[in-house]
Image 1 (tube, rainbow, N blue to C red):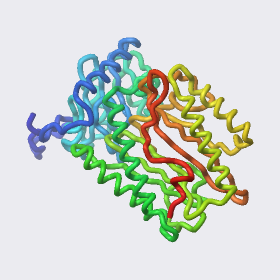
Image 2: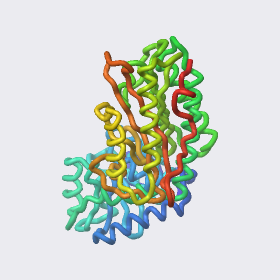
Image 3: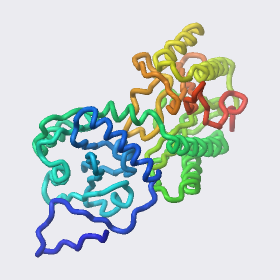
Image 4: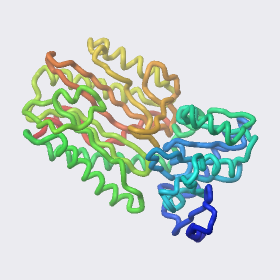
Length: 411
């Protein structure tokens, strides 16, 4: 389809239009993969008697259409009906959302407030039964949905969509395998860059650059963004999500290697405890205890067990060693379309309050962490992290970079 003619002074400014500029770009997955996902969503719609679903989150729009938007304060959407799938994007992005989505696209203009909702109404009509994401749609935007669409009923379908995302297709698993290998590339680059006197930021950049080059090699048709590294040293290792600083590595420092390649919204992680130059006896004892916990935790991951059961067993393992009080968060989580600034599959986390049963095709991490405060022997944060695929009879570890003291006393 050709692009729309330019708007002139003699032309009424439209509320929305189709700007199908150029040709469709290769998407992360085949059209059949997106069709299967949409069929799953339509089954959810049929179950609840919904006429349409209005998705607004980055993760669900990317999951069902392949388009990963950049909001910058503007709303984006995906409207799914029994027959159509249409992304809703802002004029600032021109034809890119259409080129990078499965299905149709409508561009809304910002010449009048709420043209976003007028474009959605064009697709759903008024008086329909509408599904939405209760964990993403703000109170303000929900009020606008009710005002513009005048639905006869609305339903939060976020949890149903999350359950669908938690069980990965073969194509997703193949993507995640490739991403884990890229995370390993970043890990080795960081290992080579660790030197006493080097700054956290310089070491982190070495890992990030190596991963981005490898992503471009493995995924030549992708869009490239969002890959990052958290490399932490000393006191900065106490939190799993502590940002990188300009602190210089010192001899004997505890270090935390964390690589996060991002490909088309798909996230994986590699995390490893390291030490600079040498590891003292108190630290070595704690490090080995966390490695033992990591290995024990991985042995528990198999189909038929619940997230809570795995969590309670690891809790008992740590309590026997008088270490449970140093645990700071859960022991693992799902992987797929998610990121540190959007998305989460909260139904597949290794926590006491999650009763989800592990099934073949789920992808989950094992990542125990112990944090000892400053002033105690062995102070710092110890964390290992592997990504595993639940199989018919156990779990397959798809992280390759080694863990433990034999490999990771570096620099």
